[in-house]
Length: 217
Length: 240
Image (tube, rainbow over all chains, first blue to last red; front, side, top):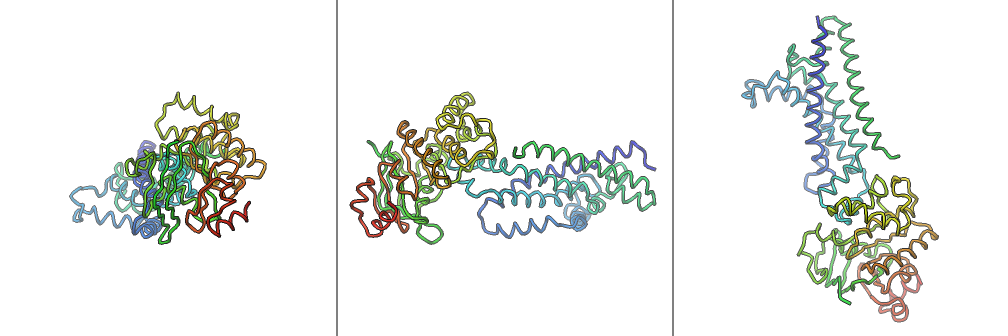
């Protein structure tokens, strides 16, 4: 039987894990995607293909990989991270980082290439040039952020495999839905599903609102 | 008058192909030099090299007597300003567009608030200050682009066919305004165009680039009466 307080705890944990994972993906994915879009170095198009492939990475495969790494006998077993929220964050970052990087690269490559020359021609330094390009591409960049968040808040396979769905510790909305459905508690599963949808909607609504504030008027 | 730009034995490549060769070219302070030639001849390559957006394979460009390597690319570019064929305005207000180069240079807010309106006024777009750049007409956008460059009071102004995309009446008005602004501010300017009438109207001297090579430099009358090579004569005859 799931009580209100427990639902609240599960919801909060889901949000915390997915927000942290999305934030980390943005922190890594935005610079990496920018490098892929603007940089000139050998292997660039290979890396871009890897990232684009990673956008469709099956969460269960990521879960398997992270579980093997963090397993007690695995290479990172000494860190004792398996079945912790940190393990879920780690797996979710691997899932959403390619989404954020790939969409960042696509957003920047869609800009007029002469914009860089124009920015330099007005005296912009390299960081100023990149900052201005991010500003110009802010609408698709926010879409990248939404896609990144969407890919982790809805994900269940990896969270189950590396988190273990432990009550009060690593149980999140998606894994709780799987559990309750398995037990035949459809009413609770439906309630949790509605909650998950509502949260996803609210977060995307907020991001869309920010995005549309910046839209061309 | 003293020399601002001195180009010696310049070769710029794009890929493996030579895109521009200049044996010698000097530009004096306060001068307006038009660079003319057919499409694809290497005119824009000259401007991009002068903006240090392309590296020469050979030769050197002295700026105010100093070789290029003396200062960083960014420090150098903060002494010049570049205006391209398309206005390439940023997706923000007209005021913020015109202020962008000053912000890159770390100019304070008060000074920006003082200088930007002056130049928007001079280019006749002060009333559009709060408008979003995307909602301007082609002529208005190019005026904002010119204001964005001129507000920097650059030592060298590089104009790459800034009026090519405009309709003839808009172009004529903008050209007349630009001419008076340049003579008033005495800004050293290199003005790339494929329109000889436009070049003659604004510039004291013309440099003719044909086939990726600087062929001849002189006053419009001199060039017309004594073209040095046959293809220069053909180009001038065809366009005058």
